[in-house]
Length: 610
Ligand SMILES: [Zn+2]
Image 1 (cartoon, rainbow, N blue to C red):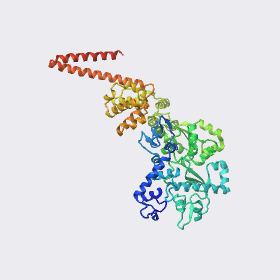
Image 2 (cartoon, helix red, strand yellow):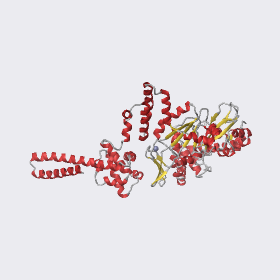
Image 3 (tube, rainbow, N blue to C red):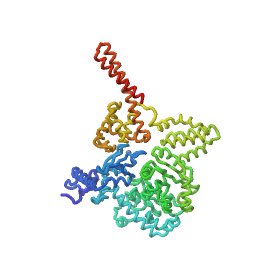
Image 4 (cartoon, rainbow, N blue to C red):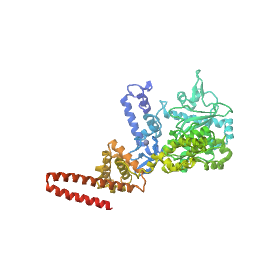
């Protein structure tokens, strides 16, 4: 006998993890094989209904390239996009970190949930069964949080002192509605509360927002506070922040407890509302608190997001970086904040972020500043924003003093590691210039220190070992198929020292015959061996970095060197054979070898005349 609905995905999942309700364990309805079949058929149905592009683009800024969409990978640090979405196959793949899969894999990886949780979320979204009723995992929790948000919001509108408190902070009706600000009443909750919300009390307790005292009394951790719902990228409530409205109440701010859906380190408050404007303005402003953010948005500065009072993390930056590479930190004037911001210099450099900073006058936070000085004041301080590294320089000039030799030496020691870490060669050069000006040490002396940097800037010029130049040449022709004609017919692929690299090139040449102007990402799919794919991706990425003006010359120089080398080797080989033929007295061989030697010599002469 089958209980109706027993084989729902959520029941199956619960069963598989040993949590199925006893009542459903009848007549083997929930057997491992039944469950697996159900999960697979739900998966098929979900994958048929969702479009991976819709899912991924909620998190990653993608642009079309040929048949694919590419963007900066959310799973590893990178500066050039290697994260690819293919809508025909409905899959994604990152050529940098090799992360890949379908829409469900993506969501699971991004939201750090299990595969079945991600499947359930997507099933829910595309309306396949009201899944998840029986489990206390992501989807039901998100439902509960959203209902709590509604409830808090209604409570606020009923409670005049809370509205007055916000009004005093110049937060008016439309902003209250936009951010769905709420208030948590002091009252103790009874069973009827859960019933009214239509959410089981257990589920409400599992959010960590409602808590039960030993006597069974249920209370709210936000009681007596203005409550700010915090949403994820897609605008779903995942937690709350609460601010006391009674003067001197401590702590002033509290947040939802950490949970699988809510992590302070990765949340950026307001990002769901700001992401469009961030893309349009190509800049994101980061502030430190939700009321700072609300004040900025209320004043019309909508390309801003907020951390929840913590310092900025790598995770937050990699999320933001999908919308822009220009990030401005807007900080209170205290030294601790500035110092913690400066710790981001290296991270920003690694991620290719152009990081700037605005330090507000002492005693101000963005909220109080904009209330006092309005938009013009804001624009004035934004106009004075400085690169993070400039702040760093200033700070260390002040700290060490340039008056003494020791001071200058200490200054050099503290800033050199940061300049060394810079990847942008032009910027690096400018900072070395500054360093020279500030310390009075000739610029060229620093170039010895930064030798690595210089090598990098001249990466596509100077002398290189055989394998490096070979990889570069293959990388260049991969990126610019029009240059393939230079290597075609030269047989160069057979002489490349690295066999895998040689195979990549020969496969590319063959591929190009059937696919003129080949798309490399698709070409990669024909390389079955992972080592070949990795080699190809590494070469392609390296080749993409070469200067556009130089690529043609690099390829032709390489071919020229190679030809010279081959001719020289041929010449040597002939000479050796000549010596042997002479020893043997083989007249015929001698004649033939001498003829070949003459051709080689002519070839060498022709080449040197070019
Ligand atoms: Zn990646």
